[in-house]
Image 1 (cartoon, rainbow, N blue to C red):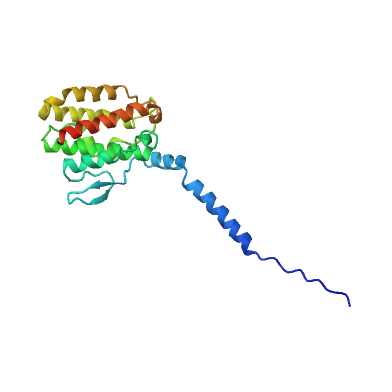
Image 2 (tube, rainbow, N blue to C red):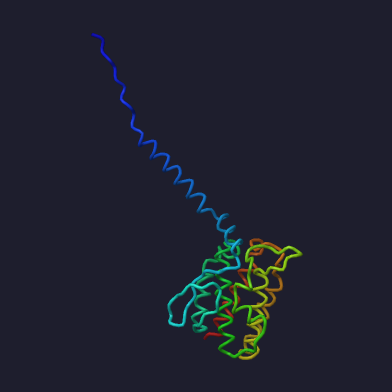
Length: 212
């Protein structure tokens, strides 16, 4: 009698597992892409979802509204947000968080010293109205505001605080204004990394001196 060969059906689950692994790798590459993060950040750049120090020392979410808290709390939040200098002006989300914390720290310090109200100070309190495209250069016909606008207003309010309460910081403010004047809102942020890094660090040094 002839032997009948029976071919066993190969299991399907290894192929299913392989397909799931491949899909997982593709999803990771797509959703972890820096280009995607920058794209989302620029599209939704008029909304800030950061954590800031609240008056009780905890953290609370905000969409740009001015929060209470000591000037020193706001300063330490800003200082912590610029520790990785390699990401400044390269990572738009990281840079926007730094500008957000800086704006709040300067506004709070101005309020502590009862600095005269100005449009620059109002804009710092309302950060989402101040920055709409943190990383994008402006076109000649565009009215949006970016890192250059924020830098100018920070320098202006810090100078107002210095004139009223810290005459010994005049030279530091002059250095800060010089760096700000060399920034160009019509050139992309990543091509001005040195200037933007210097601006944020000099702002930190001024605030540190004001919070001693």
